[in-house]
Image (cartoon, rainbow, N blue to C red):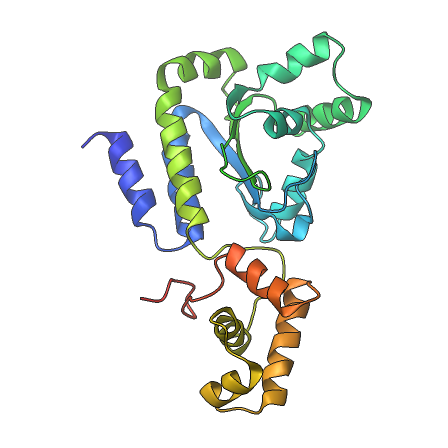
Amino acid sequence: MTDALSQIRRIVSARTPDAVWTELAAALKPYGFDRMLYGATSNRREGSVGDIQDVVTFTTLTRQPGRGREDVSFFIRTPMFRWVMTHAGASSWRWTEEQLAAGLLTPDEVVARDIARKSGLCVGYVISFEEPGSRRAAALSMIGAPEQTQDSLDAMWALKGDEIMILAQTMHLKIQSMPLKVHRRALSPRQREALEWVAEGKTSQDIAIIMGISAGMVEKHLRLARECLDVDTTAQAVAKAAMFNHLYTTPSGEAKR
């Protein structure tokens, strides 16, 4: 089994999104990438990823927990974000320098580019994943290690780019099939169960009997679920929970069998 196939097997076999991310980080290091940032949204708008709290994020830019949202917020300001929102596939960060030389960067993009370079985010590649729906968008930004130059990464990509694309796509598809981490308070098991019964067409009275609680308590669970998901109606709560793969999961986050 080749190294790439072995890495794909480990990514596919990972049981949690965090484990998937860890396997990808290990797989990409030999290619010269020592830091990565991933973001995915199902609420894309024109030039926007929607509410940042609903963006699924993973990052190795910092070891501080919960920093994914801040890292994605910065990436949104960079020139490569514009590329991601208008293209599918992979691009060298050389594109930013070409846009700068041609005078095509906005003032905000120039500021973000300068901040990135001062922070050691100088060379790299970005992948914009092709998505089936117009509301979905996802990208992986890969930062070159300190000893790398854009020329060295471009030369490596010419030889190994297809392997990296397959590894990244495997990570993306695996994570998107799992309960997704977002920057909101998690549903409680009872809130999740109530939403699952609503999704199956049960009324509050039906759910009360099934769960062995009062109809008033069912309504309380549904209200709290709506608050957790920041929506107005229970139908919206069901749709949003399903979008994040939060329904029909076990307490450990794995899909029910």
